[in-house]
Image (cartoon, rainbow, N blue to C red):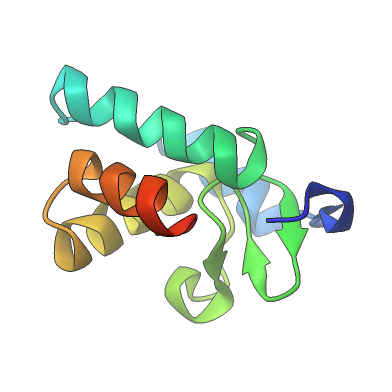
Length: 103
């Protein structure tokens, strides 16, 4: 990923409101939390507001995955769902990222 092309995503009033009312609580193991943080850092330096072409936010997911809701809560929940369905765990996703340079 070329971090020079990352730009901020504008937040809407709906996103701000939903961010204030919903708090994400991880149920992941420590190993999976660590792998998730590792991926987030490499994908976006941990920022929820960056954009790289069609990829948006902390985990660089597409608009279609996020369904237009770019709130922190939705990014976390959607990323967990995506990784569980595709890799089974964040640890497995990290292994994939290390081998291919993306997840």
